[in-house]
Amino acid sequence: MKSKVLAIHLLASITMFGHSNTSFAETCFIAEGDVITQNINDTQQIGEITLNLLNPSYNPVFTKTGSLVGTVTGGGFDVSLLSHVATFSNSQRFITQDDEARITGVRALDSEGLPCSFYINEKITKIITGTGFFNNVKSVDIDAVGYISYCPGENINEFTISGQICK
Image (cartoon, rainbow, N blue to C red; front, top):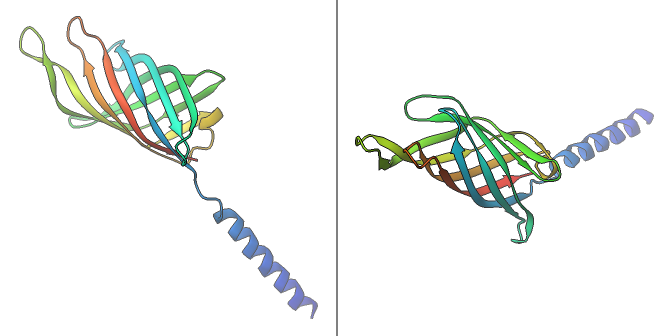
């Protein structure tokens, strides 16, 4: 009899433990914003990010402007891989990894007729570490659409951000 009662309690505990791990659903936040950076060299950009995050009821939960450092970490002919470090006030920060940037067109030519500015679509899918609001991010699906420029007199890159961050 004691073994049956023990088995029932054990089964109930396992069942409750299993449900407690799966009953917490991710909460996703709508992400929107803008990025403006300057090229420091061929592999680094620094600048500013303005990020707005809205909860499922479309109420703002995070609206901040911070610094952004982007670094090309690899890639090939059709895609560049990047990492970004975004730092906001109050020690809120995140680091992305393996962001995929693809050229979608030529935006401008230099005086010799060579392409010097390109339209870019970038896909951000991994926040590898974060603090403050960005602690324990489970998934990311953000598109950054804009352009980069290496043209003489125009060392500016501009992007619009849209997508979601889930915790």
